[in-house]
Image (cartoon, rainbow, N blue to C red; front, top):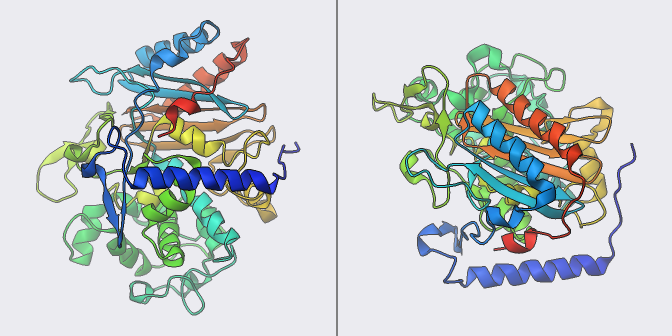
Length: 440
């Protein structure tokens, strides 16, 4: 099916650039009603102010008669599946037409979820990382054929010198993007989720940092020749985060925020932290209702902690570490959806390369692409289930939950089923655009 891409007049990009620049200046110098100094981060010599998720986008804004069928379906889903809290957003033709929370942010306070609450988004983070890589490509800083390691490669510092398997020198950027770099979870499991084991083998303090994990992986044989075998790899996307840092000269989070998110008016998204006490304001609590949902602390203290805080999400950053609201994600999506009603942050060529790579490869960042023009991405962690879906009819949607169970694939399938069977019954969509309420 032909995608509805459009060549946008130059003046639109100039206007967009002016608005983005003005937004950055306003928030950089402070807006007392919405910025807390405690939320600031220092990146090199630059202080970046985080703006809290806006609190004037409320459930009441989506109390519309024609959309009550969505309210009913999601309320039933939350109740039947034992979900503590969920956030739902729907875009139609580039406009945010529905944004509503269901259930509670946590079981203790029983605070109702609203669209401004932030959730971990798991592997939807990979889509953000892939977009950042494609933007660097457009800036002429890399090609998809560039080697990652070795002479002429991108990552050549001391961290990447002790490589056991020479086939690692064949790994290209595109192999990291489409999960064909040659690593396999069959050898020692997913290295991003065994921080204590790696810390002990490397004789470093727990939890193992990303640098520790890189040293560990590069000291092992590669099961498959790069480019020949697909094996989903969180580690590969963490390396893409390192490539972004190397070529941009900025920490991964800073580059994504400044060059991808800020120009879109998204100023609240950030990377999550490991400890429960480090939850930010308006971030939900997470619940894993699987049996045996306690694990040893990644800090090797001997205590057991909930599985929702039993992994190093800080190391997982580029592969699964972002926090977002549902409106954040949809604002990001409409900038990469290829539809002509809003300008995209990437060129048409880049967007097409992500969903239809050359030689029949798998999508970059997206989890799947179907023949009818559906693009989708899931994110699953202990306590997190997230789905982002772009349909060819101009409708896109996201569902974020703060709950998971042992049947995560089934759980995500139920979310998809609930939305897919409900949306066709909406007979009239509102003309409003709630993005106007979600700008920070």
